[in-house]
Structures are given as C-alpha cells and as structure tokens.
Image 1: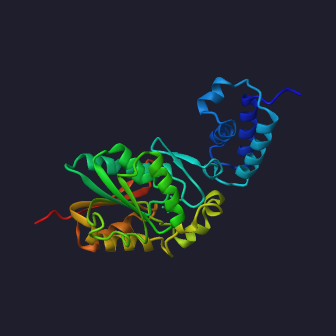
Image 2: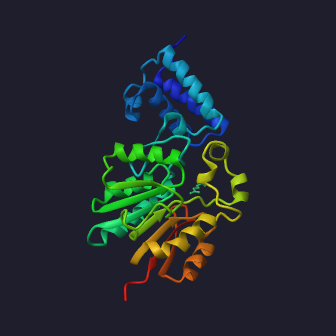
Image 3: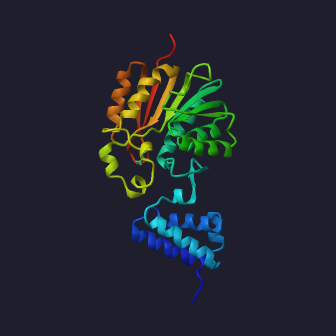
Length: 293
Ligand code: GLN
C-alpha cells in the first residue's frame, strides 16, 4: 500500500471533517497534524511528501475521532492563537474568539492616546487572553485581571508567565470587582475591559455542539436575556473608573440597544457608543465617564 504522506493525510482528514460539518476543515486538519508531529504549519508544506509513521497515524486517528465528535481543536491541542499570540487553553476557560480581537484593538488604541502609566482592569479574564494581548502591545500599563473561577485563573497564570508579564498583570479570584480592594493596589482604573458571559438562556440552547457541549457554561450564559453580568458590571463600574475613564466590553449581536440604554441610564457616562464587528453585528460597548470638575 502507498504510504500515508502528509499531503494525503491532510486531504483525507479535510474531507472527513467536511462530511462531519466541522468548522474550517482544512485548518483543523492542519492543526491536529501539527500537534501530532510536533511541527509548525509551514513544515507540513515543506514536507508534503514525507510518510507519516504508524504511531503518529494511530495518534492522529484518535484525535480526528474526538474532533469529529465536535470537541474543539483548541481543547485537543491545548493551544489557541489570539491577537497573534499563542495561549494555553483547557476546558476550564472559554476559547478566545477572533471577534474579541476588536475589543483588544480598541483598548490599545485608547491607551495610546493617554499619558502616564495606565491602570487597566480586566473582568472575567478566563484564559487571560485580553489582559496579555493588551499588556504585550502597550508597555505603559498595569493590569488587574479577575475571574470567579479558580480553574480559569490557573490557566491565566500560565499564560501571564509564558509571556513574561507576571509583574504587570495581577490575577485575583472573585466575582467581578469583589477582589479589587483599595489599599491592596489600584481600585480606580483608567480603563476597564471585559468579555463577560452574555449568552441568553434560549440562545444557549441553540449553540453549536462544539460550544455547548464543551465550553464552560458559566463563561457563556448570564440569565434569561444574557444581561445579568453586564448589568452588574455597569452598576459597579461607577466606583472603579477614574473621571474620563473608559469601560469597554463585548456584547451579543442583538444586545446593542439594550446595552446602550443601560449605559445611558447609569448616570455616570458622558459618551456611549455601540460598535459593530467585521461581520456587521453589534459586538462592543464603549462608555466614557464624565471628566473631573
Ligand atoms: N461569542 C461567544 C459565543 O457565541 C460568547 C462569548 C461570551 O459569552 N462572552 O459563543
């Protein structure tokens, strides 16, 4: 029998994933093969005709079976790229989404317009991807990142260490601002960012199996209308933002009007904006507090 070359395997796995309705079938096949071979993606292409040995084949076979049952590739390989940075990922944290890069981009743009050291707070940090991406791209900031889940914070800790940011990102366990205590560090921030859980109960039931059956529910859902956590964040932000400070958080694609309304009626914001993502869906809420008198 002809040997299984990298090229042939990629072709076969891609076709198999396509038939199973797996997202990005070719890319998913490449990631799994890279993981099994311990190779970079480019190396698959420079060694296209290389035969893959029986041990690697049987390992790949097992992983392909898991992925075909909708287990996310990021959980299988334990890695995910976000904002061109590699993150460690486990089933205890949400897998970073490309649409969340918009929040990071706006946060970095904003920080670059300000002077002096900037204090940032990242709520519901999960894998720590937002805090790490901001800190890596804006040297003049310190970040406090909180999460209610100890298990998620353990991954965030790995990611913060992996990217050499231990002395700029402080991780704290607790519900939203609960662990942010004046005297133990900054309690008022120039910028507060978050990708909170915002999926409504009915939406959750309709999520694709790769999300619903594998990602932590507590990182996704926030009550009947998905606004429970967002409401809490808005209510507590007043005490934790400096004058002319900014609150920026991700929202669901149908939450723009409701969130605008919540921000406008909170009383301490002078400017509220809802921004759409690259798919033209509501994705980001940005609100600025009134300047100092
Ligand atoms: N956008 C994510 C999803 O639909 C939800 C992320 C979140 O709740 N923060 O799966």
